[in-house]
Image (cartoon, helix red, strand yellow):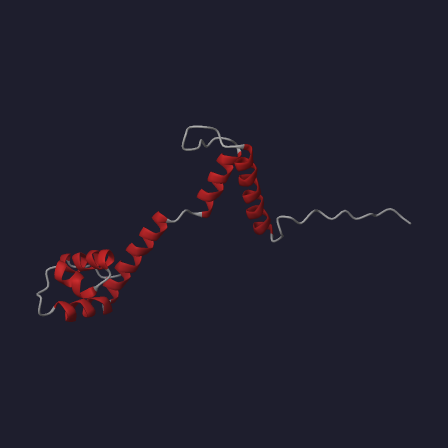
Length: 127
């Protein structure tokens, strides 16, 4: 389990996440102007600080990027006509059909085939 961060280390990590510059982050965290560059570089090498930064940045990315389930729910709600456009109008038939096509592509990919693969009909009648 990672060691807890001191208050200053946490301030450094949060500032680094915001600005992406170790020296500036060290200044914002209260390190002196003379040692900010050295302390910033040193803090980034500390495993507990770098792990904290990585976890926080991953959480931010996950919050910004839609999950696959969220995308599927959106396409499903458009296809069903549950989503209105910016003017409060129902989605057009074309938009609903496109949402259905997008859903089928994803279902096909999950099943390991192409979305436009038609089922093969095999004639088993004796000749």
